[in-house]
Length: 590
Ligand code: ATP
Ligand code: MG
Image 1 (cartoon, helix red, strand yellow):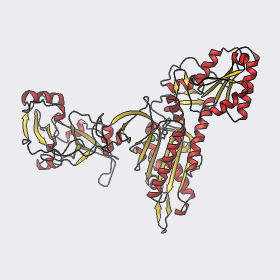
Image 2: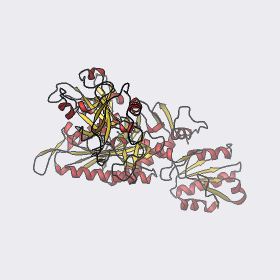
Image 3: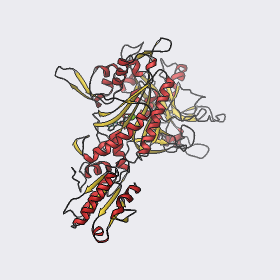
Image 4: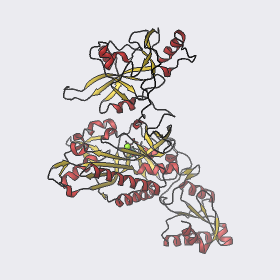
């Protein structure tokens, strides 16, 4: 066996799976985020791939295999040549033609089906591959979890209508659940925004673990959401019949929420005895939307908008941006604000925006959006639109309205879940797979059309479905180990039994060898440690590090009592079995 285990953790390994997979001789680093598969690692990888294949074949998908090295043009047509930014490896051939190392293959699958199929009679079809992908990740980390070269199963469904797309999506989703269950990998399907992929519905499968980079929100109902996909259920309206009329007050030096709260408590204490808090104030911020060119604009253009949120919360730019997609957003620059003298830094409030702005005679007032946590009828301290001034008792719905409700704030523990089932809690996880309903995005961009039942040319509905096969391997290692080493589920362990002969007595080695033969005859995969002059302690350490589920030891007891010790990787369930019965006992235990 080509193997060298390491006693020490590699210096730059940042998570347990990366440490153990290297120490136990499964993988070796070639460059940052680029890994060599050693015999043990390759065995596990092949077994995971086999399970993925079985389940994906099982839903009627057919395997193909694309090159990783691809021409620029198809990615140009879908704008992903640019959209991927620095994340793709681009290169030129000797004739100066542009190529890329594919980060994912939507374009190629779409073009393949376009090349070969032309009628609704050809559909539905789902194709997939298990193939190497390349992404020039900004920060490769966590060993195989975020690599720059990695293995992905990517599948693509092609159907004549939306209903067909949904069926293909749920078939694939079902296969994912079976795959992860067979791999003994805990997973949570999380509702996701589909991001730059485009399209509509999407779920990410996250494997919960503390080293995960993705945070997801979990409802008491068991449903889970990506933070960006969280929506706030409508908050019930508040009765404002007793709220005093809105009134302007001087609030010198109160540009920040903190300063404003201090000023309000000092100069305008509440009558009910409680103090003003940040939650009583409405914070209004200016953000700039970056729009692409459209009918009215020959060039990309900037639009300043105002967004209001409860003063005790922070803006979440990513969630907010999702509300304005496909526009991107950024904080408004000084340059942006020069065109809007009504926006007074530190004292901005809703009375000069949107409908209020019109009523106040502001020329072309900016659009005004309000965070979904603000209830109709609720009372706020708002900016007075003049330095050193705020308005008190401003009621949303009575004194001001918004052009739209948005998700603007960082969600927090205890916020109501989108399905109303109770407060949200947050966990971290690693994305192991994702399923997308792509809709018509790629078929339209690449002109994949077929004739429908009525002889009409229609675009094809697509879905795409990825599993990070090499990442899954690392996630299993990350969740199946102890401080001694790896502890693989039997279905993907590099072997099921780790047999070792210890001591100097030939009889122990003969018994072990015989056992190996009997196990192999039964179809059991065995790692056999027949090293001479290596101490039993070292052999045990290696066996525990490598992490095969059963360990069988032929040693002194074999010579003295004719028994072989059979035990679990974790040391439990140790039994002494007569040599002649050992193979059967092990086979039964497996
Ligand atoms: P992430 O958000 O973790 O960067 P992604 O959403 O960009 O992943 P997809 O484009 O959805 O990834 O790719 C499908 C699957 O491929 C992911 O669910 C993940 O399991 C795997 N994957 C993505 N990037 C990597 C990587 N750099 N290394 C290993 N596996 C990856
Ligand atoms: Mg993804």
